[in-house]
Length: 285
Image (cartoon, rainbow, N blue to C red; front, side, top):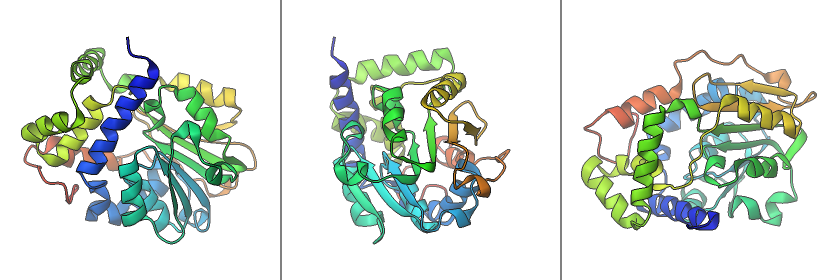
């Protein structure tokens, strides 16, 4: 049976090929995203007033194609973006980053000194830690980089967001596709779904490591690490958590969590449910 390192390499290879094939993140190129991402961060994901962000140091852990890096730049942050995919990093460095953003190609568990010798007002990780093979260790690793008065934010897959039958079927599909090279998987998905949705299918079916957790389990982890203020910013079966301690600089700028509708409902309707959508350029339009 392949070991954890094998599955981590396979998962990374899957994402690296996808970022390269799509030439970065199609969402970053869309008018929908460019016009609205800062509001998504302020009003829904983080629930922090926009004036707090100006000049803040943000670590975007697992930045992927830079969709959130772009948003933090719009809010006036100094961003450090890190990802294990060389293709993603190349895109963010060349197409997304402004002159205040630093971009590094690195495994989360082997972050360079340029990243770890600093600390950050916000450490942000969206949809990444559950792909590492050791989510709790990854959570501990990034927590060490949060300033004493800083804030941590994570999004993780929720166990209840998929039915047991769906989880089983996806797991079986991932197992069957495990020996298939990414180029063949992508080509199959593109034939069936179009190029943009092929990227989404690679995310769902291509990555072997994609763990799911309960709300209670993640809250327990955050409490064990030492966080006192744990906020569920988006109330769905997925896991969205903002964590900080007393005296955190963002507490005075906190906004009440939104009751929805949430940004991804519009995004999902367009990108998953629209069967005619086959291009890569302007999701959300």
